[in-house]
Image (tube, rainbow, N blue to C red; front, side, top):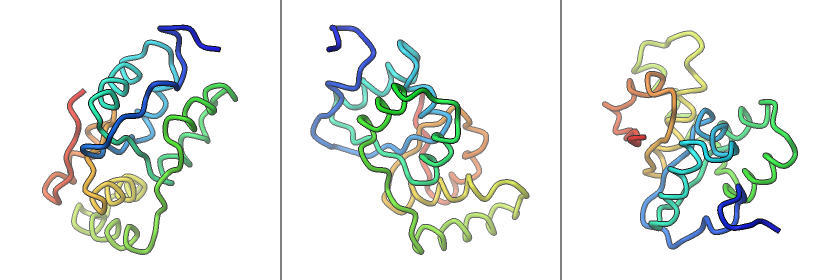
Length: 143
């Protein structure tokens, strides 16, 4: 059983007001006790902000060296990643084409498209990967 102030996943959920998608870099941070990302996540959720991620970011996250305990925490917080469907794939292709078809950038296009399709902003530590999607309407969360 977790004690008050310990790093557990309990107490994260509130009523939804808006949605924020967590990019892979942010997901990695939420499983580190007392990290800036963990603290920020708690603030969002305690104010009723819905926090999600997409299947693309989740796949990247689970490729990282995470412990079973960290994976359990992330699963509890995220619940179920949002799927990546044809709608998101087509939006990602539009973003890829509109931003110069940069080699190695399609995964970022996929993550951005997932957020745009559901009207979510993105929380990321790699802001330079996503700033080019602002003209398409993507909002980046201040950290």
